[in-house]
Amino acid sequence: MNEFLSKFDIYLLMIINLMSCFLCDQIYPQTKLINRLDSTYLHIPGPNPILKPGSDGEWDDQIIECSEILKDANIYFLYYHAADGSNYRIGVATASNPLGPWKKFENNPIIDIGTSGSWEDNHVACASIIKKDSNNYLMWYSGMKQGEYPKWGIGLAYATSPLGPWVKYSNNPVIADFGYLGSVIANNNKYLMYSCYPVNSTSYDSGPISVAMALHPEGNWVKYVNNPILLAGSNGSWDDGGYSESSVFIRDGIFQSFFGGQKIIQNKIEHVGYAYSDDGFNFIKHNNNPIILLKENPGASAFSEVHTLWEYPFYYCKA
Image 1 (tube, helix red, strand yellow):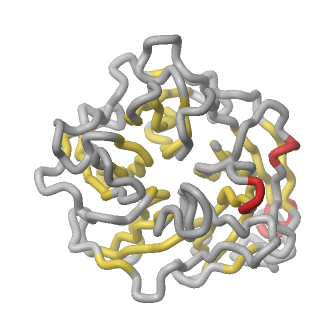
Image 2 (cartoon, helix red, strand yellow):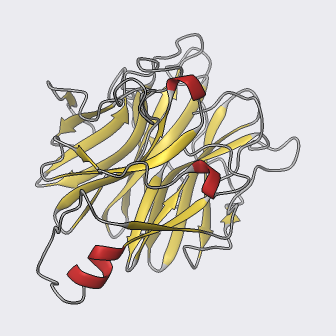
């Protein structure tokens, strides 16, 4: 998340794992993991920026940041949170190709702030969507009450279409305090929720990555006893200031994440790193992090919220 200091766009980063692409998938398709710690990740900037703030006076005229990428029925859905200088809300854009062009949904925002005095009357942001079955979609998102920063709760909404209309769960929030939501994934008959939490604990507006678990979308959600699961780097390292929210996804049975990290002395100058886990709780950072530098993408302000869609041979990261 970012303060209302300047306009932010959404950028596309295409990443290819050279070892996975040219060895695993072609020669050894049965091999799930070949030395991920030393794999070479090639970064190809996309046709950037892929999504820009709206015109003056619109609900998203200041900052837009990526929340989620979903592919459904050969349509790509890019969920994002945006601000008008006062409040964050959640919108969506669609495309027929992950490169775009992206068209904002005419009925945005799809999730608005709550009524005055509610748990989410200041901001809603950081959406994560799961398609449960053919006409059942779940969205979890972060919400904040006025005057309670950095406390963000997690809400839930339902829809029969990726575009909505989205109906908020009557007993929100499902977690009263769990920071900036990165993603929720379903695995082995349970849900895992990854979040930047506690916010502000490593540097301003950043934190480590933590996880919570539940058997049902509504909960009861239980925070992992050994949180956080991805710690900020050691003092002086590229990510010693911690992280913002980023997605975790499963590919070939491996939990993976491309994430934005920052230095304390260069607040909000984020680069992109990579980490993986065999169990979703114990993550190992890549030996050559950061794998993408901010300076490799002229015009980009920061890489904070990083969300990933895999389609051979690329990881399509929106940040």
